Image 1 (cartoon, rainbow, N blue to C red):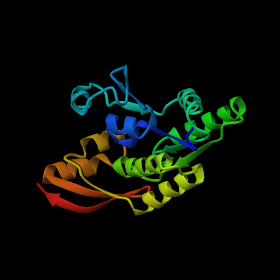
Image 2: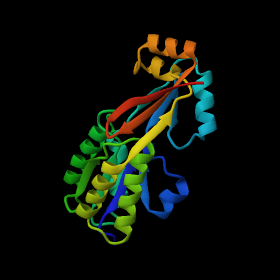
Image 3: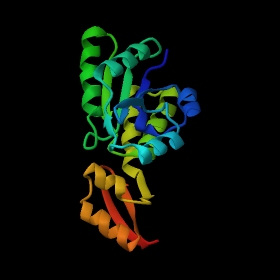
Image 4: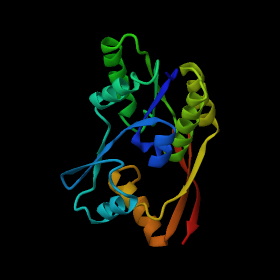
Length: 208
């Protein structure tokens, strides 16, 4: 039996074959497009962006319910002595809080099976690298504390650079003022963003 099982949310950005090979359990977030519920991971990228373009209303997202995390912890208890649950940043989602609620439920239901929830403090593939590194450490025999230390070390060195083709969807979400979206669209400017920890900033603006 392994010392620690790795559990995370579906924002981890890791392919299904890697998740299986590294024995990483994921709990899906959900999307609501025009009243229809979709689970993250069940849509291809092409399908997701197709829905994003054609949806009459801007989609909403929801964190996994505590019950979903609890079920993942139950499954983990059959293969490991403990669980380390690594979530996307609490500053961006209620997923961390949901996982903590589930961990408290697990402590009452399975007092012999300790569960620890860790905020990765990083997004997208940076989050993925932290989770993947922890899973590899776990498979190599690391303890829960050692796997958590790996998460923090990798997350502290991870930086994400991205280019947005449009600010349209960020403007719809309310994360940037609509006037900025209008101005960048008019001038055909594409912002280059960097995510370091929980901070996302524009580092350059490039004319298309």
